Image (cartoon, rainbow, N blue to C red; front, side):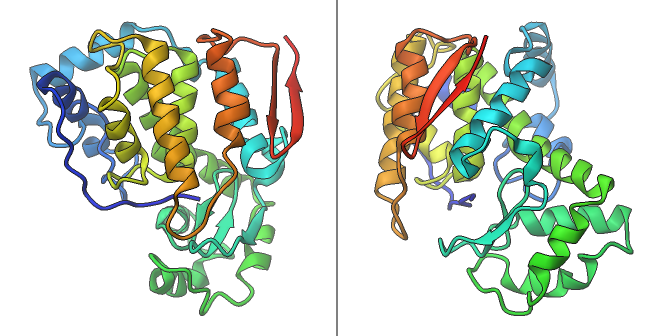
Length: 296
């Protein structure tokens, strides 16, 4: 489900550029949660880092609060798999014919976008005798492509391994370190509340944490050309409208395929226009024409 974009330099005010440099490193791909991701792109450890971390530590938990995180995972599952029961997705695997190979697991890890390979590599390091380890040579070969060569029997092996509690935990750790935690952190740096943090998470989950025009940081750069973040003195709702506009354009104008934009139009934008910046329940939304509801 993820896109890994090429580097895109954006013209932005100095204050905005400083915020980006203090954010998570979208290219720290092989070490999620490691020192590079914690420091941010291009930032050396120092006073600025410590000040940022101290400031973030004082903020409300927002989407990272257990109940809100559960809500976020249910919302994302409704958009990606038409279910609110995200824990049923550990064994999910399918070739969506979208140029990314197999899509699998609780975060839609893909054989073509490195995150599935990274997950299996780290899991194998901790559990060498797992049922997916024998596919690592093939996974390395197809990484970055839509090829499924050498992956005969891989779906069955994934489904079987998904019954192992350690692999389920590994999927959750990879999702959190690669997508959830960086998205929430970047949203907090931008001064966004719980809804904005979810908007960032869902965008990073689907588009990937790259800097290309069709990846998370490219979408954010496009939004910044239209509106300022709350942290930079802008209006939070106006900025989120600009971000959703930019994201909708990417979804609609994808070079390889087009996607339904209901996750933006009839879910996130509905919450925003209802003024629900805290992402409070009850929530009602539609995805692909299917109606979902979470009571208060």
